[in-house]
Length: 142
Ligand SMILES: CC(C)(COP(=O)(O)OP(=O)(O)OC[C@H]1O[C@@H](n2cnc3c(N)ncnc32)[C@H](O)[C@@H]1OP(=O)(O)O)[C@@H](O)C(=O)NCCC(=O)NCCS
Image (cartoon, rainbow, N blue to C red; front, top):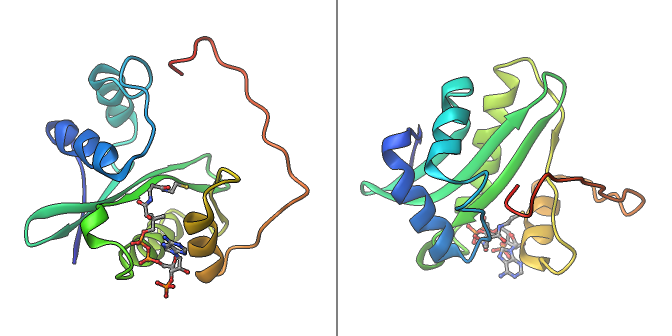
């Protein structure tokens, strides 16, 4: 498996994988091509792609605030699941953050997503059942 950072030219491949993986995204808002283009301009290394034989089989959106690294939108092609691909992506993402001097890694997981909870616990993430997530958005597309 090979890793590379994805560019705006890979937009259709990125959204194609999100769709195949059943991951919810906001194509009219923060995940539109225009928005992603703007985000990539500021953060050129935010999309980590995992490739097998030239095919994009896994992806993660990596963000940080200089103190904590977030692993978002992790998705693996259904045909390549349960082979350790997601675990490798997480470990590679941690390296990405360490290279920036960040040593705390985090992910938000919805309460129904048992596969994802098992996955993160398996690679050493601690479950915080005492934290609640609050958001405010300018529209449902964000
Ligand atoms: C969650 C997801 C990324 C896992 O990808 P994957 O490459 O299949 O995961 P791995 O093979 O690295 O699995 C590692 C561990 O995670 C857990 N796990 C993965 N899939 C699981 C499932 N369907 N049910 C239960 N546990 C699961 C297991 O502990 C597994 O170890 P094991 O195979 O030795 O039992 C993938 O199922 C996916 O893309 N889901 C849809 C998108 C999504 O929900 N993303 C997470 C957003 S937070």
